[in-house]
Image 1 (spheres, rainbow, N blue to C red):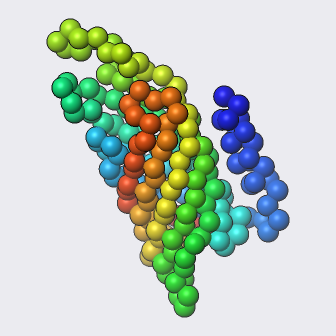
Image 2: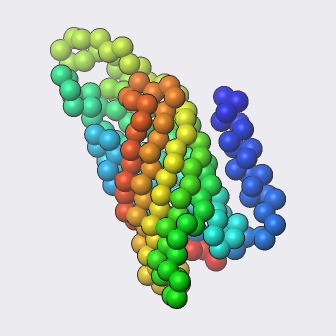
Image 3: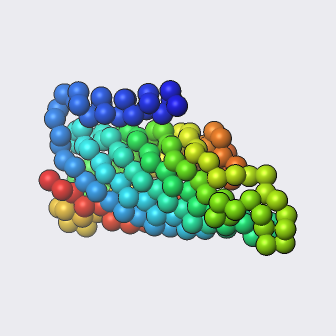
Length: 179
């Protein structure tokens, strides 16, 4: 819990004490592959300068663990993070790559909250609050002054998850610059 509070404090203090002011704000949505299923992510970016931004994301994964039994699970997380532009096309600034990371906290629901499988077996895993960290890379292709195509990949490390410690997400979507 202390880690989660520290990450939230860091996120909001970074936004509050930026020296350059807000360069721009943007929102985005992407969908794509999450381990064993599909994920969707909505983001809000607070641009601290042209080359760095604080990000607040909401991620939802709908998946099914395929093993001896098919066990459905869902993951719902909120992710405060910080990203830095590591590459940008020099002349037209049409392409860019951003690298970042941050914390995650949320909830995972295993087998719709039911500890019994259809064959009568009992699950050891349980639905619970989860927390951890993530690293991410975002590729952007400017479509206009207001829109860009977004290619996103995150790797999550869930410290206390019953689904798995490492959890990938890769998606494609759109980003809209508010101002």
